[in-house]
Image (cartoon, rainbow, N blue to C red; front, side, top):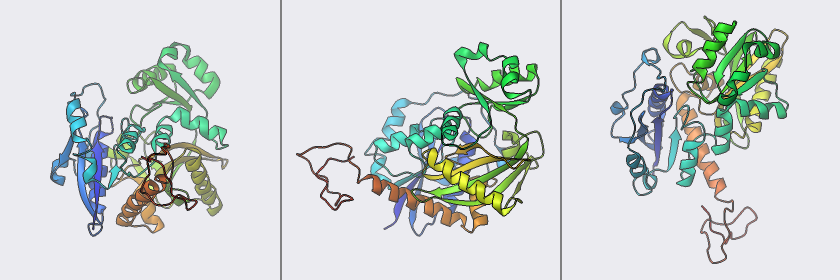
Length: 382
């Protein structure tokens, strides 16, 4: 019997359109001999829609055609529609596993993952904690720093303290050239480089449109490398790819709209020893940040040979230009095989979680087989 896979895409974030492109590619790649596929689209107002056809996705065919939203003008979704569509009888009972590909806020930050856990549905990708940590770049950097993984110097600024973060103070801490970005976000939305006070003020204003906490980060002169990781207890790392922006940096425009915005070199032309170190660091960062399922880790490689983790993406894109699937293809894993591995991994992790005790009731038993010690659990489990 085929398993029912639901792809959840869209969402309320600035990456709504990128998510639709990712969903279309995943839909096309899923092995129809193993899986039945349905698509649930979350519109920009937050309402959920079960699509009867892939044609209803209304996703543009080419990344160059998509436009990002600034998040300042949105229709409001019917909250009763959300609850009704996702209620236990209408949604969960017909789904064996979910492939969430809702990039950005409300999909990549642990919100959607927590909702699926409440419904007790297996899902692809990081759990609640790993998703939330990976989304918040400030928290991510703090954990990496504590774990001994180098990352560029940064300063986190909360909205209520923005007056204290003058350009003069920033220059004293990080240098004259910095990147300003929302702490929670992706696809380079809201990111700007500043090399003067005027540019810095504009960049801060822009970043605060997208988040109440922003990061100011030193502008590292380095090569930009990326590594894809897959797996749970025993994750694997792909070959490396290099992003070579033709403009100032790897912006949203360069990623999705301008065909000549960047060159993607796969595999990256670096020494084997350096590549091995970066892949090892990718796996270490993956573990420190509580990841599971899959992630893409982005690095800086300086002229001195220093390796710095730039950030982690726990729901990497699956568009035609996305690095995550392309790196695995270069490693020898085809797109359909990659999608199958991600789905099967989600099912395995969910089954393993069933062995955990979430509550204890002498009067109840859980017919879930024996626990890891070979004993009847005799507990009530989620």
